[in-house]
Length: 331
Length: 97
Image (tube, rainbow over the protein chains, first blue to last red):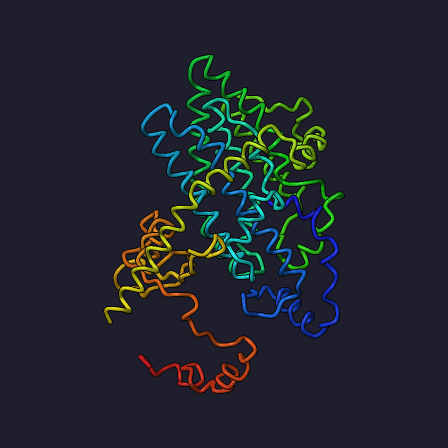
């Protein structure tokens, strides 16, 4: 899900490392045996590049993901909600940091990673390019977006690359509170006044399809799924994860007394799964290309924050250098 | 100061979950100096009471074994199974051994 750019980027680098045959065989048998690959171990360059791309996209998603919800911190409806939302947004920032660290173990610097985000050359999950006009959106994001994220992230806890897997274990532990606080907001609204109920339904209407699309393109059109699965970076296909998410989320919507905005959605007794209607992949592609409702705004906000924080970063470093110089002089 | 390309150095973070346990590596963090690394590690790695003590060390100061030497370093221990208690067969009727 956070890796949707995989299908458009770097397809050429995937099949280069064939000359180091023995090394590659040894690497693959290690992966096959469910052993972990660690930073200093030999790995195919394509594996390294795929991971850098996937982990950094994931990190960028966490960082940009702070913005739609951060939008509501000053207007949260109670002190409790505000404290919770601050904690959640802080967690997202933390998740970004864990993931940047994991990416850095592959030999790319934090600065390079940030540069790629700010220059717009790196992708982040397109879900964060949708706006949050009402408080119910904060509930819907926690419930649906974090719910979908958890679905995707739990299998990555067993990813073949050690640092990524370890970051993901930490993230998954923290993510569960995010989803539950979101559901609680939705429940409060759904059981509130008719107007609040409408607000909850409206948020579900707007977030349902983008959440479903978070799992990425259909398996048939997802080019690199097979290779990522062979490397055990990915354990389930996009469609498998999407189906799991739908199967657990539709009953939750029913519990809330809300309707999933898919007229074709039905329970299939034979397969014991929900069957959903067609997904509008055109919308997905448009948002991915940068034409979503908030793409420009999100990046501008990030760039501004980065620029306005520059003097702080520089001053802190200058201060530390001065302190060090004084200490050496005194010694 | 030189231009923007100057990165904050990287520190490795170790946390003692509670007294009685050893410090354990939890991840890394960028900071201008060790003191700031401790402060940032506290915000990043102990938001849920994960620890009672933090160590930080410059990543560049860590000396690690080379995975390429793994065989030479660790294989010799493999055939010294007599270092494990299960190597010795003791009759069942002998207790507390």
